[in-house]
Image (cartoon, rainbow, N blue to C red):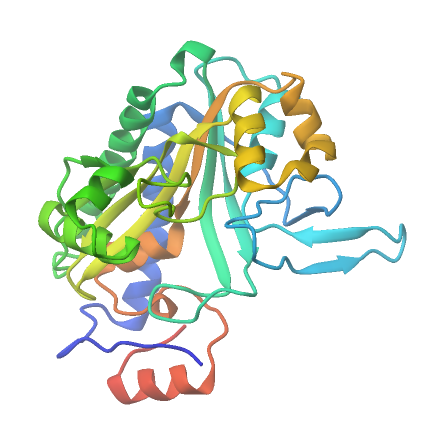
Length: 335
């Protein structure tokens, strides 16, 4: 069963056709801004990968990938959850130098995703990855990239509002950083999501740092797979969304694991069987470059910048009858 919230008095400021044009403007403008901000080149990326390669993103470790067997080979292919691991492999294969990186359009199916205002089984995002030196594996490198992405989003909003001045959205251009342990210390009796909402409501644009490892309470702030981000150097970019009255995550990113941090995180998460997968073998042997990277939600960004109440207003996906009925009654047009 889906969970849909209809904000009181909500009405889209753009017509259906203006919305479609605005989506195209946002996507074209932002990917250009992103490539210049982080020195990235566009590449093509797969929709599915070999299920035995270890290249698929395991997200929090419990989500089931969509898979199918190939008639010609009999091997199993998995539709990607994201390209977190594939990108690092691609940087090595394409011989990208230090300081340069790639971005790509990533389309995924997440069959176990919740259906609500912010979530869909169809995921579209810009996946990006950049080669760095071992010395650049720092929180400062992460924070710099996060601020550059926030600036690219805000510049995109500037152009959007020049074209569509009726769009009522404003964003804070300066990012406030906070670690997950600092959030737990501030709000010890709240859940992770409640802490995010309280802090982002106050600071508007926030970078939440160090996600995945256990906090003083013995629980992690949120789940992270152990084999792409270094849990001590990763983070989420969140904006306060006035329409829904909640924190909206736009990007998850991080400095990627080194052989040492991969070894440690596989032990901590009890996922040591992954050491035998081809991707993990290459990483543990030091055959892959040091990188930083992440994913930036395309539909989420369009939703935020256009002041939409439901992600189905900016992407064409599957919605159950309950969602359609609620949105029809509220005048929310699902694509």
